Image (tube, rainbow, N blue to C red; front, side, top):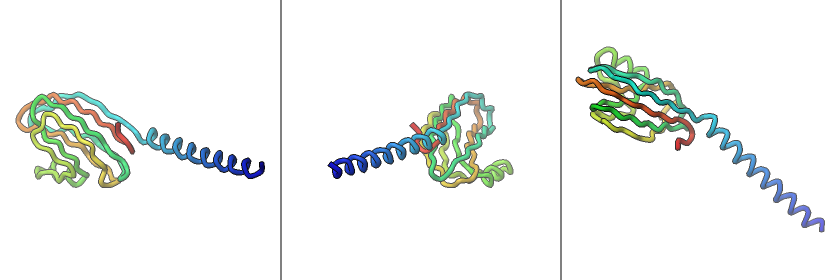
Length: 137
């Protein structure tokens, strides 16, 4: 009878450890998850900037819908300075002339990044949805 009791306690301890691990994992996913949604009008030859802050173990889901083609770029502070100085931005992610864009993207670095939406020649009505975290669903 003592052996049965010993095995039962071991099983209960293992079950408890697994439960705690699952709950901590769900807490990390819930705490790191954030979202952003905005609709705006983008004037011709202008840029809309969204600051992103993430870590290498996080990902972001980007969804952009536009009435006219726009360029989407994710860059850092150096690329942002280059863009404002009249040169082109150096982009980690770059898509030109898109009216619909959706993509999962993992942060390559833990420093501050910027999502740029650039209109070329035409005004655009733009809708942006972002979801960031360990898992984005």
